[in-house]
Picture: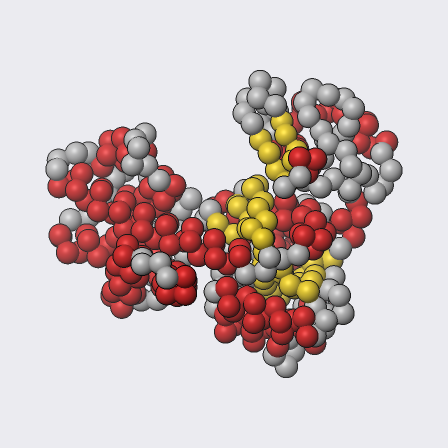
Length: 376
């Protein structure tokens, strides 16, 4: 990434280093406490200082020409299809940021809060695409993504030539490339933009977004990605975001099983589970999964808003990459079998964190502790 495309807030001014990908249309960059340029929304978002810090610069921002303020980016209309546990929060971030958003879901009730907040509802994917400059999809499987793209009332029936399809579902690399070619043959360009970090971070607009696709499309839609997420990465050309996203999920599922075993070992060893959670959190054995999913396991809700079906799908993708790239994946193979067993026991719609319940059932010992949330 070019040096001028990194927006930095200096340590000592904001309490930490912060950097976000940022190709400002005006060419301006902002670094506290300089007054030579106005802060953009990404700078304000990444800075931990009170928002009042930026008030002295507001007048300068308002005095800039309209294009320099980035208002042209808001002129793009985004369609958003798939308003499940994740998609509704991503679409909500776009609405809150001021983008024009048209939404669709098989269950219209999933769109009610978004419509109340300012989004418009369309009856089907084609109707969304007909009024959008770009259509975002966040769907549960490659089969559903293809149906929404190419169906009788699909996206490609409505998008104008040169428009963008942004796929935020987690897909296999070959599926991304295959669907990207279908879109390209219809005159539509594709970006992949899977996310990672958990539904709770999507709800707060702080999820990590991983982009695959052409650099000019990345630049064009970066303001929308910055509205939905905190850390934005371009992994390379189309297909590469799928690879790294599946890798991150593979790690998360392995960590999830390990967290359950660690907590069970602690309880059987006579250690208070709250103490065990906090000690592990402060140790070299800590993980993001322990810090987050460990809490809903200890609560007993297991509610991480991510299902067994999705976990099995993503681990299957990981094993596929292993075969394709010639990499033995012993831990991922074991994790997949464990999740398949959990799915057969508790159902495909059960929360993925419930994989730990296999161990609870096998030992006749629950992993409950007071004071942990039912949902993050």
